[in-house]
Image (cartoon, rainbow, N blue to C red):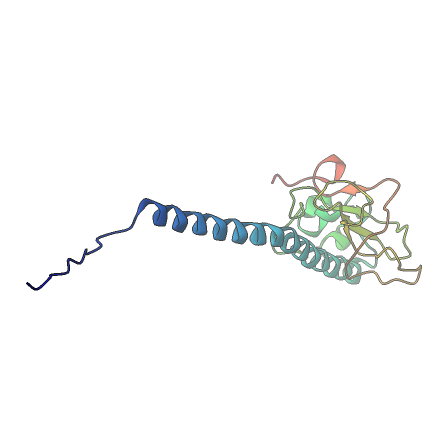
Length: 181
């Protein structure tokens, strides 16, 4: 008598297989999330450096027109708000134009840019952001000077480090604010 083999046909997945697949997906999502979140800080710092360079260029253009950089009272706001301009006569006021087409009174972390007309780092002026931690003078600050830069540093560009000290004029808030966010 011939024997018949009975084959079982498998339909679907077992609970263990489904749980293993879910665990693999969760691990992959975790790895991707950690890598993406780690890059956000770098991206924000890069954005801050670009914005700082753009502000530095606008400040240099302001100097070409008015033969001076903005005062601490005028701050960076004068680059996009004529009402902040302090001049002795109307003829000088007529030279004003928007030096920044898209005002950015705050850095990528939502804090005001700091500007000081009288540099403490050998530049024409000091321009900096306190960085992602919000603490002034840390290595994560983004500034137009670097910690190892001497007194002969340029007036534009960007770097990190250094310790800004003394009075500063934030772009938004204080006396130099004029633009609501």
